[in-house]
Image (cartoon, rainbow, N blue to C red; front, side):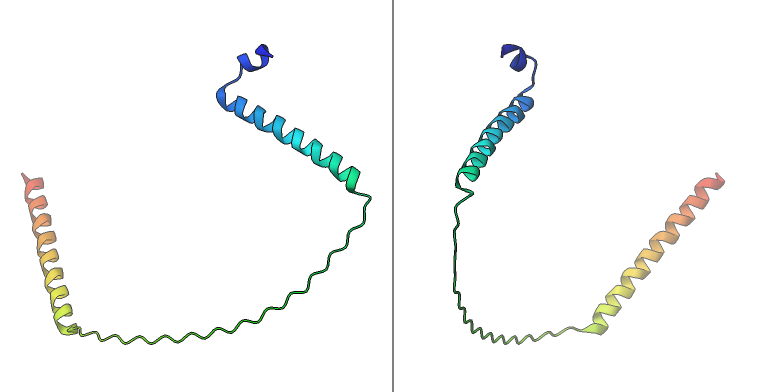
Length: 98
């Protein structure tokens, strides 16, 4: 037994333990199935479910947005971006000529 567990890693020991335990449980279940498998059992269930769901949702949202101001701010940001890009491009051209 020491030869088996001496050369295995911790993970292999966990897998081996799980395999042995599940094999034993499976064997017990099969024996119980064979012993009790010849009995006849009937089951009857009568289920009646009545569900009434009523959901009422009312949402009132008031949003006040100045679209012109947002467009104007976006335009200013784009102008600043373009100026910075053109300035960087001009600097790159000047540096490459030197």
